Length: 134
Image 1 (cartoon, one colour):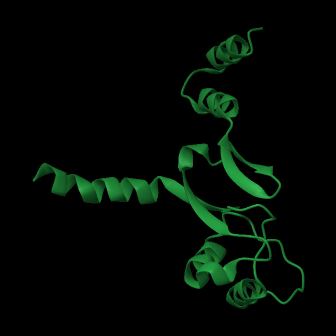
Image 2 (image 1 turned 120 degrees about the vertical axis):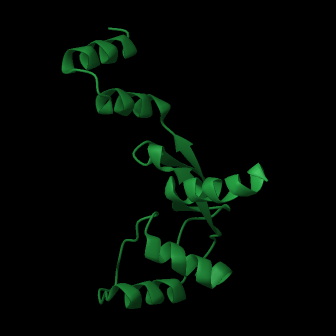
């Protein structure tokens, strides 16, 4: 009975405390199909020929989910990953021959945590100096 009550809470936490990001899951290069780009431009009311789409753009992520494999550009297989929101400013995309994966910069994350903490400025400075072993 307790597990049944926990499932909606866990689901809510997972949805609210994460964000989605698109990566290429095959060798080649990240890119969208013409169909996906055209649909994106239509939904965003964009009339330029060349556009940049952020990997976390919620509209394009929805389009990729709707189109499935038809959203993939040449030599691309788009995969949508979920990442905890705590790492939004601390991730980077690592790439080898077009195959991508998400890496977390824990060093940066720890510094952000110190800066965002409720500590006074002097204590923050001391912790940062300790962190850099100065």
